[in-house]
Length: 51
Image (spheres, rainbow, N blue to C red):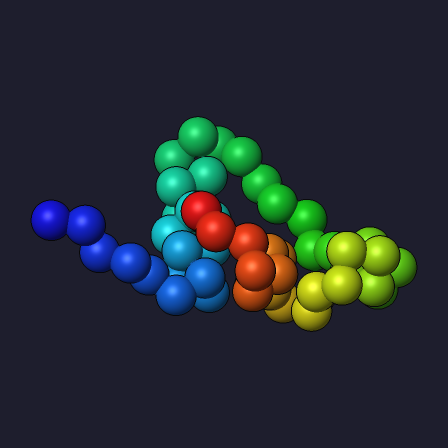
C-alpha cells in the first residue's frame, strides 16, 4: 500500500532520515528562499512539483 504524504510531512520524514546518516541541514537564508520562491520553513518544492 502506498501513502501519499503532504509535502511538509514528507520533508519532515526526510529530515529525520538525515539524522541517521549523521547529516545536518542548515536553514535557508532570506536570499536563498526568495531566489527559489519558498518560505524559509518549507515546504521547499513548489505546488506543481510531483515527487
